[in-house]
Image 1: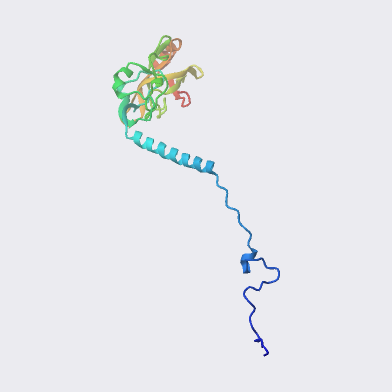
Image 2 (image 1 turned 90 degrees about the vertical axis):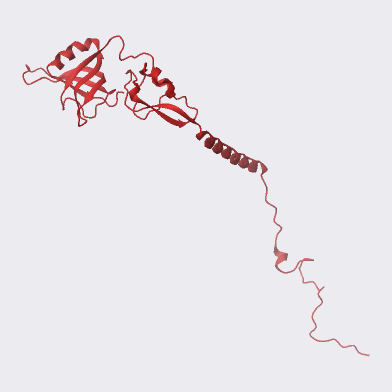
Length: 232
């Protein structure tokens, strides 16, 4: 009996293509194995420590910001060497940041001392800003009173400022030239008019040797003062 084969029959599934790898077919046979990414546990631990440290610091700042202490704030300029009056200070409540501010409870004691440097309004007082003795009001110094008119002093002048004292010859002078009588004098006390323009009585601290000549010219109205903003 003759056996006939069916034309057009499909090849068996086990038939391998020439050049194909066993067990792989199609695009999968062209993919290369991918190595797993390297993990760096040291960097991960460092990042975690930085995050925890930042969170801890923020927490401490928030907690400490709730702690308030009483301190002294300057409300009126005090020149270096001037006595620190209670009227130039006020009490403020500030966050306890660890800075050694002078507490308001010591205001009366502070008022018996002097400023070691020029203190501007808004300054929070620290112990280094206070001196028990004054180099401006001590031996070798004199306080001279001036009576000046508008135009003989700057409108911005204030107590604690530094000024040059200048001799300005009057109209009846014999041709004498103007000259500096005191290179750097401290404005100790001053008054202001109702409009806020400084004028009238003015007390300055000068060297004892310069005091007689300044007083002489001041009595005849031949003195003017020039502010020295950079000399504080």
